[in-house]
Each structure stands twice: as structure tokens, then as C-alpha cells.
Image (cartoon, rainbow, N blue to C red):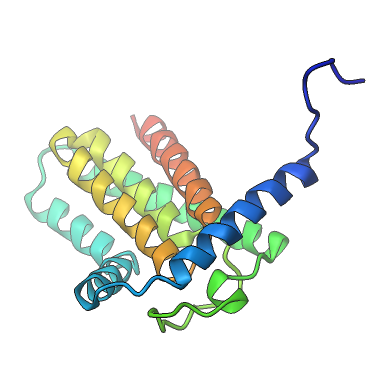
Length: 185
């Protein structure tokens, strides 16, 4: 029974609304003729989310970090590892096709690592590391959060993910970062 004046939206109905908006945004992005410098920047940023950036950050912290450097690196590893485990399970369960496979991107010709997009693993790992390391090193929180946000944005602009894929990835990564820090505190 629904309350008068309100609309009841089932999970399937909500998913259809989100999917419709994701596809409309995807079509706008995929037909945008972005400047060459912007294309190169987005590819560079998305490659930063491939893992090497987070390994370099962990190595740098171990060499130059303060007394809690080991806890920060462990929190990042724990949050990222849990995030990747969740990512694999959810991706296999949902099997949402990537935007670049639905409609080719006009300017981004990257090959996706697989055919499924939900959720964004790059975004999960980026936010998991930004939050967990940022909790131990507050001065790094804003720059790391901006890097995570740029990685998420690049994934959408390059046609690897829908907007909802990266939003869910950001929420998962953020939650896992906080849980990892709580677990190690």
C-alpha cells in the first residue's frame, strides 16, 4: 500500500531510471569532440589509477612517512584488497556492459580490461587509498581525494564506466577506507 502523494519506486524501476540517465550522459560524452590535450590528460589520469600510483605512494610513505607510516600503508592495502574482492564479486553478479561497448566513444580508443563496468575498480581503489592514507596524513587528504575524483571522472569520460559505476565505487572505497583505519586503530 502506498501513501497518497508519493510514488513507490521498486528496485528495478530505480535501476531503470539510473540506467536511462547514465545512457543519456554517456551519449553526450561519447559525441563530444574533446581537445587533444584534454584527451591525453584523461588517459594519463586513468593510467594513474591502474595501480602504480598507489604502489608508489605506499613505497614513498614507507621510506619517508612518520611513525604511523606502516599503519597507513596497511590500511590502504586492506581497504584496496577488500575493495577488489567486492569488485570481482559484484561485477560477476551484475554483468553490466561497459559504455564503450554499448556505443563507441568518439575520441577515446582505450580497450577495456573486460566487458563489464559495475562497479568501477579504479574508483574503489582510488577512494580506498585516498581515505585510508588521508586519515593518517591529513595534509594529504585533499590532494589524494582530488586525485581519486579525477580518476573516477576519467573513467566516465573515457567510456570505461557509467556515472553510477563510479559513484558506487567511490562510496565503497570511502567506506572501506574508514573501516580499514578503524580496524587498525
